[in-house]
Image (cartoon, rainbow, N blue to C red; front, top):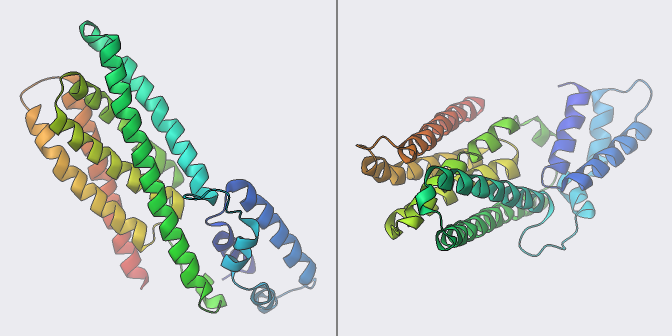
Length: 277
């Protein structure tokens, strides 16, 4: 492994769970320290000695992070706020689309009912999902702190997450919001609960992808679990709209196809992980 790649892997572990502003500061500081310590014509062994002297990247990361957020902290808090913003925009857009095509159903009461249901769904889904991501982060950090740091740990290849994939998949919730709006207006409580469960699973899946920033075992198997359960839940809704040619049927089909695509991607990651072991 080249020296530059070894340092990059150390910095990746250091900044993995940091808030983005803290991550930039930490990376800059460590690079400056390493550059000052390294001799002019350094070898990989020289770099290893300096990294061992610096110690565990998780211990260093703790010096840059504050605990101001009780439930969710660091990078997870930034993701949490971003997810809330994205979903809120999607909710408003879905609401506009729904009532444009169903203008006869437009009323203040219907709008308020849809907003109430979808806002509650967004808040609890995002909060629980990122709280789970926070607990996973804490567990991983503690497990790394209790064992001594070894340079060999940096040689373990972890499949990198293709970040642009995360939010496009999350954006499929736009179509779920449209269907939820319809079920709220016609007061179909059973379908609303199913759709809320599907939306929660998709948010849980994608927010944890962003939090972990890579396809480790946890992210991969969580994605498979969420995708399989979501497909099982969406099936009765597809059956319900099977004989109708409507925008709701198309919306559910788009979501189902996106889930299947993600499931195939997750299974391919399992195969990659198994090959590396």
